[in-house]
Picture 1 (cartoon, rainbow, N blue to C red):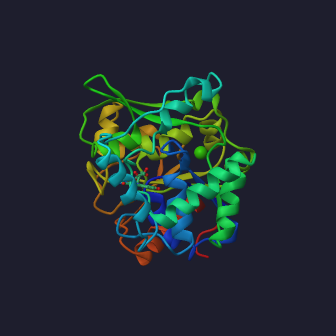
Picture 2 (picture 1 turned 60 degrees about the vertical axis):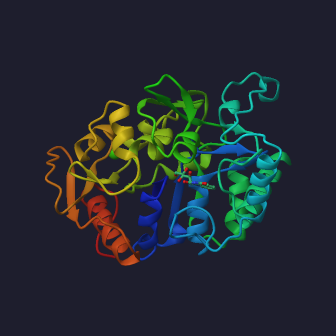
Length: 338
Ligand code: FO1
Ligand code: CA
């Protein structure tokens, strides 16, 4: 058995080749839910859904979110209605504390559907309607995602990190507090980041299924350590569980160069070195690292495997997966060379 921690695009790209190395039926994928938003009444779980759609063979691989060739008729009509009625544009937070049973957390991820600031495809929306309806019927998020995984014929066990809400909030240098999706989608990662907060994480729990999965050897793909992996590490008990099991992490950096995305700005924003060395500091529990062959970083107290870590296709993902497998074998997490 092996468990991946997934968020953003880094680990999902690695998973494309992981099935050639580890039996997908014996693979668990714990997905970040700090990016989740309730938008127009529907719970959108971007990092869960990237794994869901990739595993189901329907992911839009240009963007690494949403469903390939999806239509956007409903989204366009939502925009048209807002324009026509001059309702304005951009994210609109819903702050009704009465609906949140005194918990401040939910409203930080709850947005009006007016003008729909994120583009939700028509088929993608069907997933959000189904998920939200299952929650409304009393299922947990883990159960709802399990049903969606059945619908997409997923082989891996896809586990949201928690059934409790956690909201990744960006504190900007300008003094604002905004949800990650406002920072990323509406502001195009433009505001300078002063700090990142995982609101609700201290009161949230990893699920029993996640706790069980974290007893197996763990692979952290080249996901962004701050907003993709950080929310999982902020849950009570997760770092302790990772300290007690073999863990290999793939650096999303080559030295100080990041492959893609906002990882460097976010690392700097939370006071970490935007580099492989900074990732190693963020993952003190990681026994091993897979680093790019051109990465000059020396990690004397960890086992290091080197390969070309750029992942553009399934063959690249298989190569990096094999390096992870060798690294895990070296630190007591299974056999190499299968
Ligand atoms: N990213 C964008 O840049 N623009 C969008 O309009 C957008 C919509 C969207 C809808 C559903 C979904 O699951 C993801 C979506 N994303 C969009 C991606 C998302 O903002 C981030 O890439 C992830 O949260 C980071 O992991
Ligand atoms: Ca460990």
